[in-house]
Length: 467
Image (cartoon, rainbow, N blue to C red):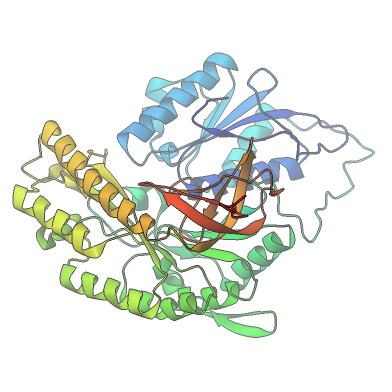
């Protein structure tokens, strides 16, 4: 299907006898949306539908959309249009589904529109489009899944996203996520840990904890305790990390809001209970701009905390994202952002030039930054970060890094160190990967021999120069 989307592989789905209805699926957007797609696909499989990877083979197509920024809206509308042109029967769900009038204006012939996490509406639309065939010999037999069944996954077998909550209580002025996904709703901690345990039993080696605000986990349920494996765990980030630390796999924290209690999980990272990795979006370094963004603005304290985290856990990797060219951003405030970047020496950084999002409060702010200025600032920002990243990665040359293999390509094996999340960070290219017999999902120690701005290069077996 669409080259920019994830389409479900038909191979894991086994249709129930007498059904054989075929559903195509296009999944767009962030890892949270990916988990939504996995849940819908799993329910389709449970009900006996075939999941097929092409428009031609499908009786109906489901498109799970993204609507966070304008480019994502365009991509989603294009994907819907492509599915209509290629197949004709399209069910739309996901974040853009919260704006049905926009979808109907562009594509009035879609069969159904629903918002994110509305699995029941998607299934009802599928039932209307493809009524299950009645078979009196099998309809009374309940369809069961095994105790360790993890459903359909759109990630490789060795890693999986673990969504711990829905929604967000923050009202950042540039963001419309709460209007699409609602306020924070935390999953019970025992339910999350049971899912994690099941994933590990099925061969998952890395759990990627995702939410809109991981550090707020449990605040909506007043950190209610639940029992898992004979022990009480509170529904809060630290307790969740303690439980994940019992599973013996990599656990990586994403989307962490910089609350003070984040400090409490750093010792667990130092002990190896969870990966020493924080994905924590700082967004800017100017107190005034952060206030306009409705984000925490104590920049000096942020730098102090970063230094303290590194004292507690010297191997910690800090990833962050920033917005440049926010409305009203002055030259001096942008220079302050560069100074912060220089002092913080963050390991992994993503940045975006501010783009108005339909429905965001920031659209009404005065003094928009001209587009050419935004792009010039973005280029300067990324050039500085590339220099910082190159210097930090060069320090790893000569070390031995534990690497999780993602793919073997010819003579090379491509994997990731503890500092690299899939798809957003760098990788480790292993020159003798095929020779060493490496396979996806395998852990291996790699001698690091080189680096660049993004990646590391090395070998499993060092070559003796005298040979």
